[in-house]
Image 1: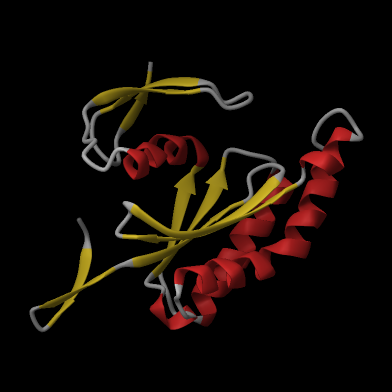
Image 2: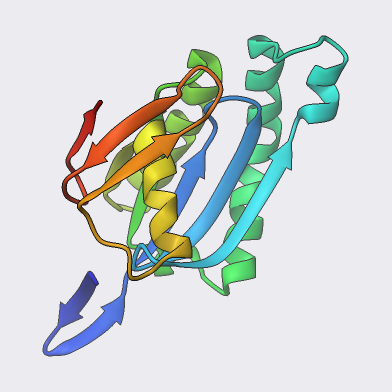
Length: 166
């Protein structure tokens, strides 16, 4: 468990997590990488159903419309202020380039404005890491199967940061 310690006193780390790789905008506050304090999601399923699939330009525009309000909601639901955030994590690849750019640029601006570190997250590795939220005692090594659109992968997870596609 990673914590920030000052003068022998440890505090939980709060990470603002942003995901916008396709047609849903999601913002969460996660404590110590294992406990979700809040999550806010805006789905675009109804919008894209009209077209029979995701329209990247429409998805990007919708992300722009909702990302700031979702961030405020996630912070409020977690009982956190912007100052309580220790780092900002954001999906940077793979995904639709327009939606990814919205999330990455919002995260960069938030991190810069509040002098917080920015942590890029690979979307597929994020799917694997989500298991740590559901199974807090889970530790590598293990095999992980990700079934997500065109990103289906079988991975050998040898450590928290090392993955190998099989």
